Length: 294
Image (cartoon, rainbow, N blue to C red; front, side):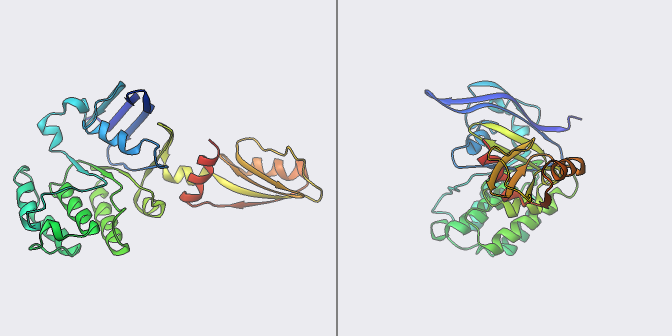
């Protein structure tokens, strides 16, 4: 059995003369919950659309569930659940009608779980689509993308329009989905605290490429901020191996480093006769340090 749900090699996408994706290499293993991070314009939504066959790639290659995204079979499509950043539905329908209409396309639609999500996410089945708020539309879009219990969930900013209670419910549902290590989730987000709660892996995009992909815990273990305090002024060109960012003020320096261990810290202490304090960073801090280092 192929343990890769998604693979891209040198994937490129251009719109006219503008190249948005400039060689994306990514491999999403079965059972992984991958958070896709990046600034606005980094190419996250374009990558997702290429993976789903909504956009045709310009160069390179991609496979999703072992197939070319542009020619996905009906069987493969039935194994994918996609929720776009902006949900568009038929405004003249009611919530229950949209759910029934969507369920008709999926022989394995889980009606019981769908009903549970509707109740859990406080949606009125009799409400007209045109009367729903942006957050309610987002919740309904998530139900429509998850109701057939796909093998691969692809979510583009799924929590962007949700209130804190809605985000909490969504994260709880995604955690339940990922418990069996068989279902995979790829979701883009700007909310790093949400990602930290459920992601097993993180992919950081910058200017059309993947700058980092790996396990979240490994990333948090490797990237640290250290504070160096010396009895004398540090040199203006003070730097440390593997530094991402360095700020020197007289006898002190703040350095973000990509890799750190006890030997590294001992060398800094001895070289500068300094005290060294190590700070753990949350994912948002790590993302900003990596982004600023570009």
